[in-house]
Image 1 (spheres, rainbow, N blue to C red):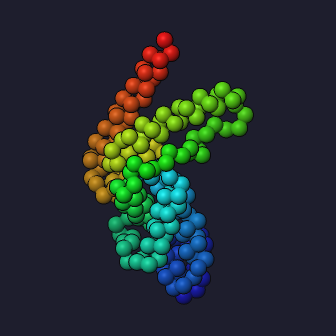
Image 2 (cartoon, helix red, strand yellow):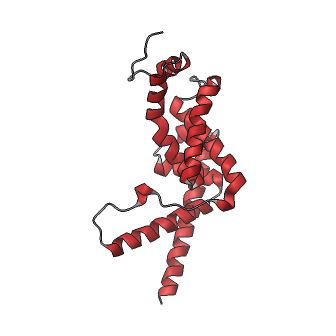
Image 3 (cartoon, rainbow, N blue to C red):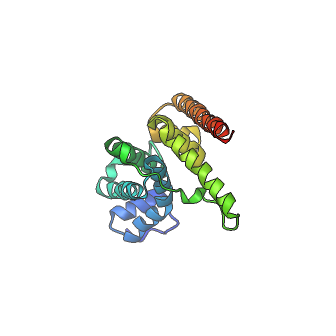
Amino acid sequence: MGVAPLNGTDQELLEATLAGEESAFLEIYRRYKDQVYRFAYRMTGSPDSARDVTHSCFVGLLEVPSRYDRQRASLGTYLCAAARNLSLRQASRAWRERSVAVLPELRPAPGPSPLDTLLEDERASVVREALSALAPLHREVLILAEYEDLDLARIAQIVGAEVGAVKVRLHRARKKLRAALEAHVRSAAVAAE
């Protein structure tokens, strides 16, 4: 087999990877590492755990490529589903030990005043805490919909559920998140009085 073009399809790159072409694997990694890492980070709340999950997803793809079935899902969907499973396993082992780190993309852009930065950091912290308090099934669909901007069908593939179940989970997640944020606003208003 010749060298797969770096702009080849995922399937071409995967076949070239399995034939031993390192550049093909590096292209697959380049295409999907950020999405897998972001999802794992938001699921675990830990940069170290997210790196471990991301690494394990790609190692798993290399070690047991037969787990990926292109008829069932795209490669990106498969990798996110693998990240989901690994994240949930990690979360069940160390749920209470999770660190609540600052999400870099939630930090304000350079330039706002220190007070604006402080307020934005506080808001982001409140949202992260409310998000982490959601049940894992609700948290994962909310992250995939709101942060990864995936449609319901793709989310359903990743989490292994029917689209209707994903809709229900997403509705409940948004409702619980809204209630938690409203409770925070009420308690802050009472504290300010």
